[in-house]
Length: 267
Image (cartoon, rainbow, N blue to C red; front, side):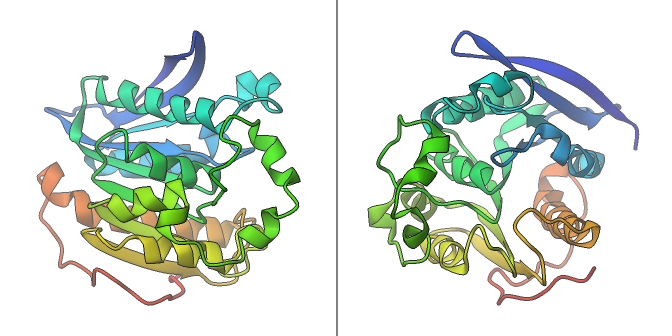
């Protein structure tokens, strides 16, 4: 399928961040929208190949650069979670106002810090599908502190290794309130986001319509192997293809179990 690609300037707080919008060139009517939120130290470039795959299914996809990255890298040491959340909100609004994405059929896909921000977005905007890879978790305290300084907390590592209830954490509360479909993907050998963090997220989705949990066998946090990157892409595309089929007017495949035990995907 031929795709249309365009660069968007997204206004936020008197500044501009950049995004890339991808959609089928011959699309008619409103399409399911997919917003990609990269992790700390990443960029939208990391998601463009996946966005092309998903746009080819019949979706309008937007990947963008958070402040503190790429052209706004000068803000890397000072940008806060509040500011980055406003970036995500602005990008969501750009996607749903582009004239091609249906605001009632939006998926949010995030990795690490981007997954954390994606959960917070669900409290402020309608989200139907939520895909989280190696989602990060932070204390609620220090919301206005530069994100880079959060790691200076002497309790930072210990916090990520203990059980945290939704009542104790803003992101997990958002997960507990979320009623759409969820995909959580963990890296088996993740040294940045230990298993207790992922377990806290999975346990929080008590009201989701469906929950799919997968583990990429042998993978590290950043998916440094091409095989691990492909495994994540395959999981994401397969999951979105199934769930967005009715919204795209495509024949719906036999659904998978709504909750699955940890299993390594096929490479």
